[in-house]
Image (cartoon, rainbow, N blue to C red; front, side):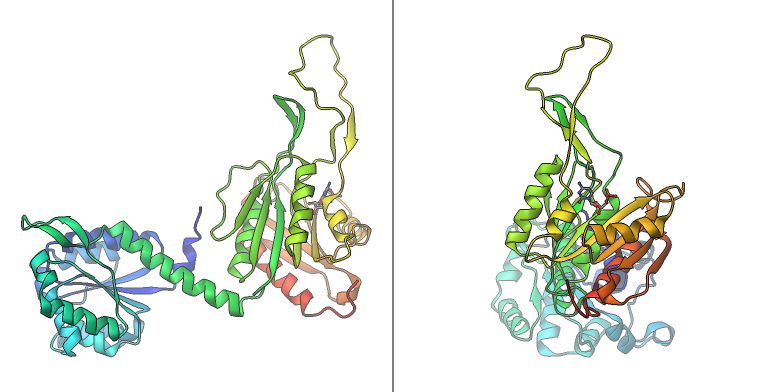
Length: 421
Ligand code: C5P
């Protein structure tokens, strides 16, 4: 699954590194967190600095490293209270016995223990220590206290330890920890979107990509649609809190995170699946697919052999998927697309009525700089009469941005509906 990393660009993580040999893993952890798009600031205890230098973390995080509580220079940059407020999550990895004990006791004699008390952000600890120290009653007692206080514990793994012992106490791999952090923010974001997103609680079905109409077992008729616009819309709908099903023709794109993808090949299969989605419940249907207008009347059972100079293949018309769905009794809000080279407005308005759509997004495919395989697009959106909404010109922008504006248009129309069909 692909993942839109930009969603974490505004999330701030304080990675607190305490004294332990696992501190070397924290350098990689910074990298992985940055890979996911998080802003990372590193806080180091004195003990941590015996294992790894602040310079390493400064270079990896791209931010100054915080080591002192009562240092005039450091406090002038970002003081401990500011730092505590800046954080969306404080991740202590590795967390030494000493740091756990300080947290549990409520001490505030260095930067990290003070931050712990001063922050409203969730605190995660990844204890890493010798197995005997992990098993010690005092450590376990402190951990229980921390769990009661709402701290999340990333349990240590078992295995060979740097000291030669074997047992529980190893810090999990940086990749694992970074993934848990990513999942945590993703779930939190999803919960917000499902409550407050523009399409919160809506079920959306999107058709995307080309269809492939078989001629014989090895040949087919298709088109150059890449599916990029439909996939971007699927991602935008999901980010807006919708439950999204993507009916994808043959394209080589990663499934957007959180989106249910069903691969289909022919127009007939796409129609079947569309009708099925309607039965399962669908509030909004968005047809971005470049459906083949015709299919081969009789698909040859075996590969057609080369013979005469001419080969005639009879074609029959495919059903219009979006129009078929729009005719159903319990029809969803219908969004169609149109690609025109001229008279854009006139043709779009015609299709809006002929296919009984609620909204149509039209692009001028005579423009060389946008369209099919491009990463950018520009569109004009028209609404059915009953919405009493002005057409919208979506200026040239990335397909992601256009998708976001389309989501807004759908949302606005749904809230503007006066006399639905
Ligand atoms: O008529 P035209 O192909 O220009 O209409 C484009 C719109 O109709 C798009 O939204 C496309 O996904 C949809 N369509 C469809 N089934 C077809 C042909 C087009 O859903 N067979």
